[in-house]
Length: 447
Image (cartoon, rainbow, N blue to C red; front, side):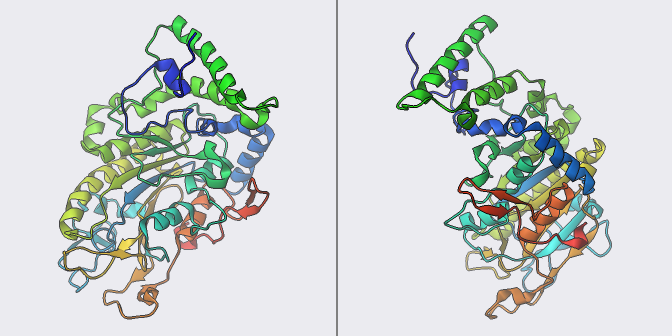
């Protein structure tokens, strides 16, 4: 038999050659991805049960997290922190919501009717104004450092909590340039990346009869074993490589009924319509189906918020997509009685400046912006912190324009607490260094 080249094992089984956005298939991402496919076998059962018991003892409310990631940095002034009539609004308008004291952008009418479900933290501050560094900080709760690669929030959650699902526990839909990574926790906790849910997941369906598929699996094991052994003089330590277990987990996923959660076409037509005919809308629908199946963390990306040019018009178009899909997501979670067990987080890497530039755009602004949270034990119908409608733009420290400032690390600590995860727990890196999951305290007003 002619040995195939460097195709991934799943590609070997399915022999699919169609192009898709992310060629990282189930096993080619590094055999560690099996952890994302349900990594309970990576950790002794007793330890996992102990973790769950501890979580229950801490009053765990939430079970899953949905991150609505606004890639590029949305303007707080054209979303959840408008200052209507002020100079910094630059003509942007606001509307009342179903919470008397809260106003949001007039471009978000559906979400305005759901403000009783949300807490708006309008006073997030950051020292990162570069897209890549700010994204890393927002997703991980730690500023980037050259000596350690920290894990994203979803990776921490999956590491700390056990599951019985056969599909990935950490999923990124429509991932940006910098998707959620697991850092020192290992690639098995990376987000499993998929594109528009309108398309089937690539490389998980066999295209040949069952008997031939079985033969290919047997050949696959031989190929992988040969590749792993190539150039190694000593016998492989399977407890460290876990490559055979990774393959078994991937194969288990291929035959799992839970894969149907990715197929949004199975949802009623009326439900599909409510989310909107957009990739982001379909991603939000898929997110509700995945958490219903038991997936721990789903990130759905809406790109295009880097509005250095024509800020108002670009936000108008993006808000139309956001308002329809995000409000439908909240409604669907409530209908399925999942909202009380699911934390929904909305935000991007930073906000937008209070002045329009010469191109009618707003530039990067990490000095006071908004994160919105709902569900999973988060108290709704409130605002935490505020930004000034007349900021001092000449101040040496621009955060003086923010009242009751909070960091994204505090938001992460809050979310971990709702899931019953101790933010102060420490894990040991492969280098033998103990590192805390989080170095901030939860925002008490949110809980």
